[in-house]
Image (tube, rainbow, N blue to C red; front, side, top):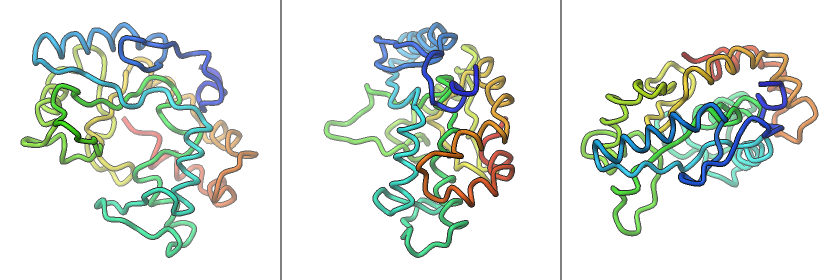
Amino acid sequence: MNALELTGRARTHVIEVPELGCSVHRDVVAPLLDLAAAARAEAGIELSVVSAFRDFGRQCDIWNAKWRGERALLDRSGRPLAAQGLDTDARIDAILAWSALPGASRHHWGTDLDVIDRAALPSGYRPQLVPQEYEPGGVFGRLGAWLAASIGRFGFYRPYSRDLGGVQPEPWHLSHAATARPACAALTVEVMAEAIGSAEIEGRARLLERMADIRARFVAVA
């Protein structure tokens, strides 16, 4: 992937997957379809992708809305925070715990996706994408267990499987290892800084000062 693709400012590396209603990296299409077919055949799980490729502009909208308090901002325990009551660094850290920096989202690469089990949805239920949903007894508990046991067969892993002090655990987030790991290595501090250098993003000056730390804590995961 080139710098524009790595940072979500181009989509020349992704293609549509109409069967799942999403766009992913061209090398992820076959293993993703195989994963969905196995989930259905082995466990009666209807794998539904709620987020896959996401471009820079969309990630920037999410970031700015959280910064301004227009979208929910949570602490590391999932409790609501008032954005206006936080200083610049605290606001940055709070957003990064749950949302990626524009230009540094794994979703830009088309290698990562968030999944639910459509067959398990109660009538009228709106998925929250919180860890409790994927634990035993949760609405997606069966999906969580099947993913833990099965995704390695198809080349996927869960990069946010535990709290390492950066991004909070996300059991719904899958990554295609063979495609994502080279992308992660190529997403250098310099590439990240260039992507946001002229963008309309809240907190830009401090983000540029902290870019190396942000990459180490929130981007360079296993």
